Image (cartoon, rainbow, N blue to C red; front, top):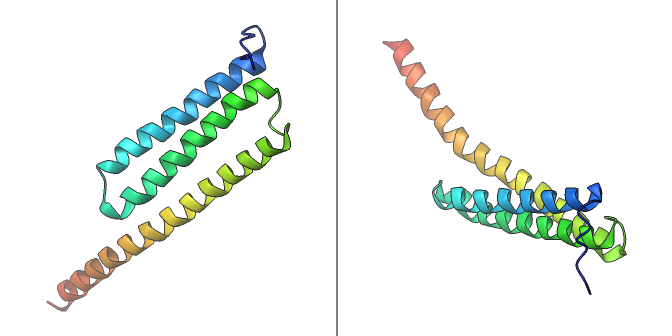
Length: 116
């Protein structure tokens, strides 16, 4: 198999750029995740992997010429989108759990201030 290096085709160029973009987003997210709250560390590494895999699918798309052809590429991209949606859902859960105790302690301190 030869690589599609037709850099006069805007779709090919776009897919290469998009692939590198998503892989860069994943790598930056993974590095940032190592320096964050331990609650988010595992999630950021999972999201990093999903973004990198999604970026690779764009490089494959540059070779095939379409995101839906062959059918397994469509499935690959669909699974990546499901993975990203799951990561966002999980992020919201973790964030809500971390914010709730902070809100309770703030409410308690406000109530004790109002009693004085």
